[in-house]
Image (tube, rainbow, N blue to C red):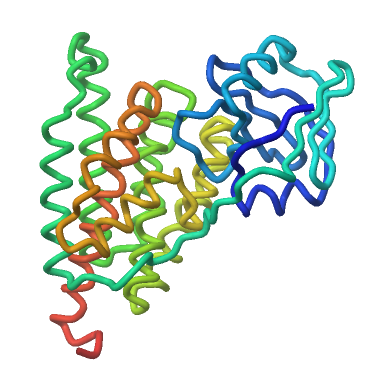
Length: 305
């Protein structure tokens, strides 16, 4: 029997309902389990960024489990506070795990829009200094990055000018675009949707617009991307995202000097080959575009001062 060390409150509630599943995919540091209704969650070792679907295990336990579970498709049983792999006589319990809150929230006193923009400038500088230098080694990858940038810019323009009726069609240009377990276009959309939820919490007058945008994107997802990415995108539409990304958004919105901005962004940069940076780019786009949209509608008298 092994004890999980960390799990999100959201995942624990889902697992407590109980279900049956199987091993979906196996990687060096993570192992994905598929339950009912295309629901995925992840077993992972300590020391890498966690997301709302992570069950974290101490490194010693993880090394044992990766030796025991070596085949895709093995049956898994999920009970109230325990995960078992009957054919491998393996049991993982959650009773002693630390539970973290994956739901979106504003962690402190909200900064003024001007102060948030200052943090965004610092954040944009960080990303500009960390371009995809490895992607420019081959022409096809350079062209892919140009295509991603163009589609992201079009979506940014639609949000900042309030053209939410165009969001679905523009998101089509990003969904499933790029290589990897979570394609770059999906990661950018995850950052946009999740950060949008936070802006809706920070400025209530934006909430309905964020919901309209995220609904439009979610309605285009089925059959357009892989199961792993689909699960991440559905989480992001509710504002649920990697733990360091959640903390980073809070830093942008609530920290006057953004003291931890770079350290949190560096943690995110370690996710996948490009996923971390793509999510960060989506966060920058989402917060920037919704702040500009809010200024736009205030200027036009649509909001009370």
